[in-house]
Amino acid sequence: MSQSGARQWRVECDCIPEVAEARDTQHWERMHSQVSKANAGHFVSENRLAADLDEDELRQRHEQAHGALVVCNVCGKLKEVAG
Ligand SMILES: [Zn+2]
Image 1: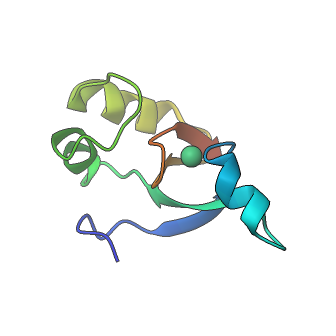
Image 2 (image 1 turned 90 degrees about the horizontal axis):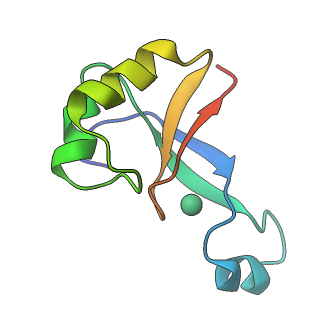
């Protein structure tokens, strides 16, 4: 599914309201990719992040996360979800 081999999560995100409007159910669900220590560099090199973080900063966020750290596949927003 994604080159990073990242685990995929369905998480709500507030991006692309057009899609939300066109759907009958699960309006705000978007696929997200889980950030791991191993694939953090991938998100940076492939420019998948909305935030301007380098690899070290992203790894740091990953280490500090209480749950899973995921990136929205659509808009690149970084968020934590309960692991
Ligand atoms: Zn999004």
